[in-house]
Length: 253
Image (cartoon, rainbow, N blue to C red; front, side, top):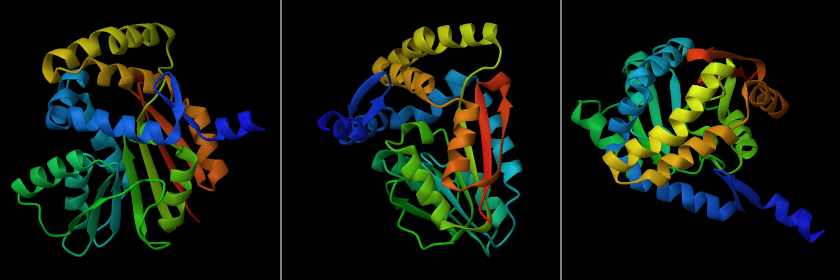
């Protein structure tokens, strides 16, 4: 019985099994460490392709003027910036992140670009979102779901605050569909990426965690089924760049 209780309280931080509270703290420390050069590292480690993936998700969102959008685990605000142009003056975008360092950089970056009105900033845990039921027309979470301690709990929270007819978009690193690509990709994320992190951020361990968290993340079909089990409907996904990234979409009806 004690063993079952402990298993319920455990989570994976990369390949390590830790108690849930410890994972939350460890992930927080990772993003405090990399926040200052997060955008630079995204460009370097993806050769800029992350911008194409994010643009694809934005186009897939079909967000309209006047709507409310939540950019969850929004970090430095790349998706928020693009959503803000879609919702216009009559809509709003909420940039939410659990990490204060990431949120500050995102807020400063967007305000320096003159994006002030219609954007709101909330520091919050994705597992207990502080918003009313049926509130958002669209929720997007880009490269953040795998860092959440309890994905099931977070997805339930997202479903609750999504309006009927609204959609959830999950843009996340996934599992390449080609064996040859998968071998090359694993070589890159486990050996080259931590080296880049060591040179640019003086932190190789945070990027080793990134590689491990990608490996531990549910594959495309498992995440689709997880979303369906939570209650999302018409759930689909598309592989981007050979499955290195996948975009999952689910609706609330």
